[in-house]
Length: 473
Image: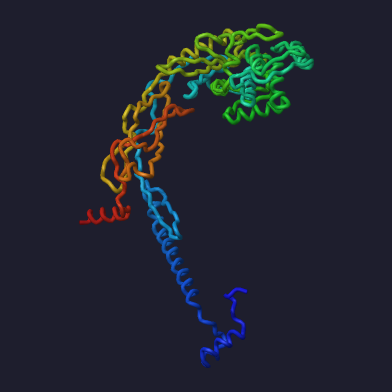
């Protein structure tokens, strides 16, 4: 039984007798505490007083800590039962540059088609232009761009050829059916062995519908399951005018807009392995032999892809991607033409004209110069005037009329450089220059002089009181 529970009647009586008759007559008499117990109680209450005092200081000081501009949250640590507080104060940065800059000059007038729809997209910059009032229309074998993206995402080639597949009698029958339907196809026979790379080449170069279905079943187990993946990817990329109904584009329910396909085309060219399987005017297969690409402009004037298509419902469709030199930079430009009644060659001419006009309108534009101040430093404990600057010039590829944004993200070091303050050249954050679709340039911002740390005992309240007293006198 615990000693804290002593209190039986015999014990109380014996102790009361030793204290005298007056005490003995009190029915709730208790024994005196030992000296050890009294000392423990004193230590206990002393510790509680220390803890409550520290907590009171935290509550009293947290208000001005939170209210101070540029002040970080306090840091608390415990050592041997005592709470220690360290108030960390850092300066604030006030931007000196505009957060938006419009590239001077008139918006480009591009040679868009009068029939069907077109769009031009510059990777890393955004949509340069498109025909007005675009609608979601059938896109034929342009559908296969998304098919290739899904397969390569789920089964990357990693600079190899991927697994080897042995064709069956059922695969040969699927080819026979494609020929009977007058679909684009690649002949395969039972026992023929093809790698994943060869299947993707068959998908993108001769645009084989039977291979599109083969890859879809291999990837997802069934064509409907694969189509669900295609639509999920379209949604994740924000392609609101795009919906897929099959993996090949034979179904007119596979629909999109020129703008959506230009965005997707730029995305596709970043997928590892895709350029290597479709940037060919000719490809050779074990049974079919040498087959030519349906893309009429691949290999011309920097063109590295991407995909053509034709059905009665879609008419001629062509997505063309090319690398072009703008200033000292290489950029990817994607032109898309849908619903053309002429020919693939005619669609190729339209896309090349759009690519040439787009390249002519692109330029490298300086947004920030080298050593330009981008923010002023504000610290309540000093009157020093300091700035932060960008060490190097910041430029973007853009066209006239495009709006470029500049944003400053601070990350001031909590611990001053040498203990006395922040030394010249200290990185105080980064500045980002962005086009509508991507961050084009990032540079650190650095302090242009020495900034002392807050002196001991400094507080914003003391500064405010001192300033008020000085002004009233």
